[in-house]
Image (tube, rainbow, N blue to C red; front, top):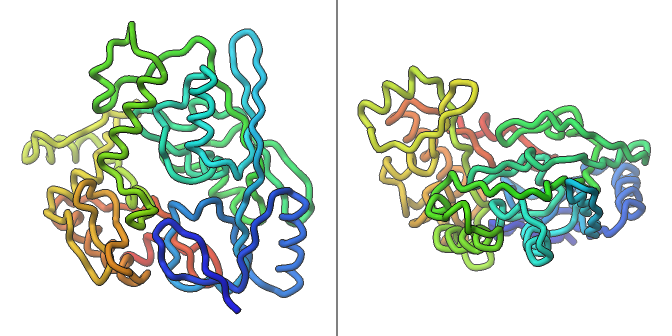
Amino acid sequence: MKKQIPNTFNLAVYADDVITVESTEQLLSVYQQASKQNLPILILGEGSNTLFTENFSGIVVINRIRGISVMDNRDYWLIKVGAGEIWHHLVAHLIDNDIAGLENLALIPGCVGSAPIQNIGAYGVEFEKFADYVDLLSLKTGQIITVQDGKYGYRESIFKSQYREDYVVISVGIKLPKQWQPVLSYGELKNFDRETVTAKMVFDKVCEVRRSKLPDPNILGNGGSFFKNPVIDKIQYEQLVLDYPDMPAYFQSNGQVKLAAGWLIDQCGLKNYQIGGAAVHDKQALVLVNKDHAKAQDVVALAKVVKNTVQQKFGITLSPEIRFIGKQGEIDADLLLR
C-alpha cells in the first residue's frame, strides 16, 4: 500500500514507502533495502521547497538526524547541527541562548540539511556567510566526508552538483562571530538604530514581517518562494528602470543587478490568479499556494503562466527556486516550465 509523502504544498502525492530515520545507520539500512529492490530513494527534511509533479516510484526517507552542540573559542561560536533539525528551531534556540548571527534567516521553512544545499538567504544574509563545513554520508560506501568549501552562489552550492548523487547531508557546521554585526540593509530592518538594536529585535521583526506576508503551510499549502530573484546585467536594468523607476533593485559586487521576482509578478497583475486549485498568493506574489485541493498539474500550469507573463512584459526569464520531483527523482524545473 502506497504512503502519502509529507510536503508543505499539502498535495496528495504518494510513494512506495515513507520511512523516518534518526541515525546514519538507519539511513544506510534503508538505502541498502532500496538498492536490493532496485527502487529510487529520495531524502527529505520537511518537504518544503519541493513540488512533487506526480507520485514517487520509490522510497522517501525523512531525515530526522538531530542534535545541536555549541563550542566556542575566543572569537567565534562553533555550532554543529544535525541535518534533521528544523532550521527555525535552530535560529530561535541560538537567539534564546544569546548567540547572534542567524536572526535574519528566521522562519525560513525546512531543515538544517537544506541550508547549505540551497544556500538559503533572506533580509540581506545568506547561509554561506556563516558556513563552516558540511558532513556528507556516502550512501554507496558508508563513509562520512567533510566539505568546507561549498562553492556557494545565489541559491546554489557544490551540493547541488558534485555531491548531488548518492550523498546525504548529515550535519552542518556553523561559525558565528562573537563580535556581532547586525545586517540592517533590507526592508523594515533599515528602521533600526544600529547602536541600540539587538539580535532579538531583528529576529522578532523578521518573524513579524514574514508572518504578515507569507502563508503558513499548515493553513495554506505552499513551498515558500517559488521563483529565484532574477539577476540581470546593468544595461538591461538601465533600460527597464526608464519604464519602471520604482522597480526594486539590488546591485551586486560583480556589476550585475538582482531584481525582486515578487514585484515583477505583482506588476503583471497576477496576485490571486488561479488555475484549478492553485493560486498566486494575494499578499506575496512570489508564493504559489494550494488554495483549494490543488493537484500538482495545477501548480505546474500556474507556474508556466507566471513565467511566461513576466517574460512577455519584462523580457526576464524567471527560474524556479522550488525543486521539482518526478516519478524517479528530481527533474529539470526550467525544462518542464518551457
